[in-house]
Image 1 (cartoon, rainbow, N blue to C red):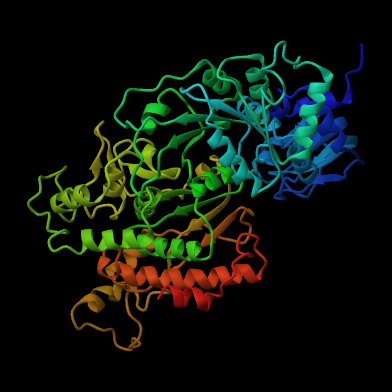
Image 2 (tube, rainbow, N blue to C red):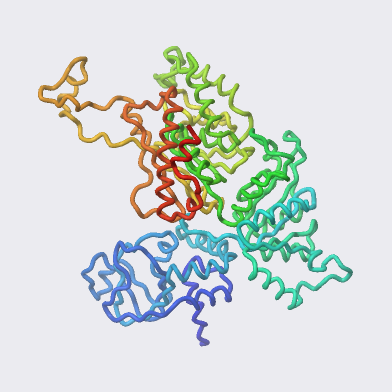
Length: 625
């Protein structure tokens, strides 16, 4: 029997099943062999899984506690040669469920997380194969695993058959602000000359390798046809970017994909593909027409860019380089004002927002931000819509719904104001990538606002559940604010390729222990009632106090947050109501001032995102007064 090469031991890990031999050799070279004596512990129960461990010889057993027993019958699991120990928890950033100990002298191939990251940083093309192996093997995938930025990008022309030269020039300039960039095309390599250049020529292959080593990112510009060069571009790419030139007709027919696009999507997969829609200009409203492109192109994300608009190309470049910034906003009703205050502070500190996600009021104001409206614009909308006389009117005369009312207040006037003041269009037409959740109470599951209208997103989420009637989708599903039931979509935004996520979660302070026993509540809540001996400053919480805390759960706790996540938790004043929109501007200003001081603290600690903030908090506060 011919012994197998040692690097094939890595095939014990589901995620590595589909890796090529050269890739396995690179991982094996980064690992080291560990020898364990009988009874020696490899991992403690509850300890973070910080390495991939594959048994080369001997036997390891997993036990429930420190009282190690050599009898394998007492073990929770037994690992023989070729077995991987807790591999799925390595990729899921989990912990060892059991203590793992050597039952007899054993050797283990160990690949630490640091060494794994170093290998993957130099070979980002492995990620899609690795993720495919995880899914097929049933391993748990955690979005907290940082996916390296693409080093090679295939630029494929859309339906027009040609990538505008001005687009390539603007994108290259934006990328060069972040790192070294080179554009390679068939013409540049002489492929357009009679006879061309053989792409399998060793000198050509070496030149391409050298270009990738010298630069942070290389743009391979594909031809308009499925030429050998086009196939080579797609084959070498970590990511595929399809470039479509919009014709300015949002109501036009679906735009069919080309052979080049289908090849790019088929070889790279939708998770590593993007669509750049080149428009004449970017307005402050919804762009329109995105559905015409997306119907035939299952891409990871789509982006609007306009020739001459440097900001739109800078945003696309940040996504391609893995440096985009995203915000997630969670909380009901008036919490949206606090979201806007933190956004104002981030913008004043020079932090560009590239993608937005949210639940509850966070989904409503997030969608409005994504369509190009500013925080002050949305503050004005809140005043216009919610402080109108008669907006939140009694619902006593509404039709019965299973013996009750649809909501505490009627929604007819509110709906008319939404229709009048909120832009018309779908989530796909938003200027920024957006991911919002609602609660589908018809099916007891989450609802993703992928293709919903902006008006439907706002109508569903800006008020807490039960205040107004649920919004009803075209399929008859009843939708309400999900901020109290689902965490903000941090992982969904990471999947878009963002490098840093800012989670905004307004919080109300703890109420403390009850000032009276339960049996005394009735007497205390009666008008003028007060328990003898009760301190004068000890007050029971009001209904707004209770509602605010019920709708603002603490989703982020502890100090072990991933490096790519920054959490802002602006305090909400006690006694505030989630429906007190007359105080919207005040809450927004309080959250802005609080967030600016938090940013100053992060800057002093050396946070790389805020290190470049030049102005002091006092200067920014003065400018925003």
